[in-house]
Image 1 (cartoon, rainbow, N blue to C red):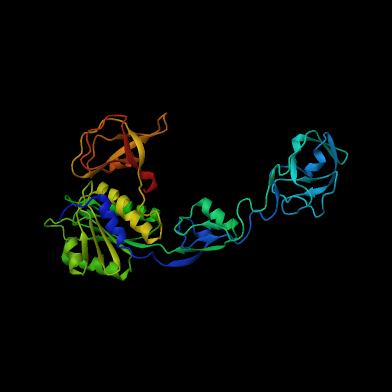
Image 2: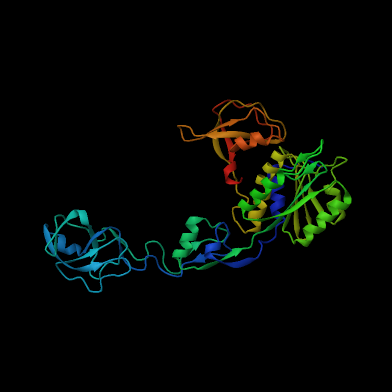
Length: 407
């Protein structure tokens, strides 16, 4: 099978997702990190009244055109308890930030700009109408769209929804993503490893990536390299009613790479299983009923890079995010020269540091072996090198993906 480009592989994966997962109503306090299922509109106007933007005195600007102007203090307006009268000529109201502007007033004079004595204030300068007044509806008005469908709910979005009068929101349920490690060589952390075994590290990284992307990670354990154990694992995945099954390892076609065959035996329709990228060429994609299949490579760095490139967009597509297929890269400068690239798109682990000109400096690590988690743990970005890229000198503009957005 011909190697697919990264772009075409992602297009095919996302094209196979026909609709987002269902919506559910969730209390606002539990919505952090969730994705809204529909446009959210304001149930109220904010602020609901003209309010003071400073501590000082609410005044009629017409009274201050011939300074100095002496005004009688007619009362007080504080947040939650506004002045209930109407401001007449020659009067002022003591007011505090956020309090309603008294009827008849059209400006606020900061307290440091007046002299107060014997129940009056003296203002020494004219004040234009509207000074330090937050108009009703300055932030938003009732019925106005506050959040668009597909928006991930961060602290700012949650505060906006709360201010708009929402105690609960319609959000997409978390896509259920099963994580199945495969291989006789794997043992869980903490268990004694045989002389030819290693610790299964990939599931923990992929679990964290799924969780951060907005999915619900489901640990399916480790499947041994036997048809029976793989069949058992696939049956467990079906029973769990997964939206996505992410297998780790065994997706190639070697004598001990049995995942593709096991999935095919259970009825998987294969879409592709090779992509022109490094690290991560043996990436498998297919469908098993309603379940999306992503066979990630077994090498730890490969599985993490492929999760960032393919699994995260798939989760975001399932959540109805309109930016699921968006370009995750940004410009940077190379910290050192790079050789020409071959036919595969390369993702070089790198360290991103700030530079005086505004663009960060991306310096690739010398060792790029896809098994080395120590290098990945020190990296905060990958440098993206398109296929057949010519040699690039230090200082050249490149494209990078910030890993702290995903890991």
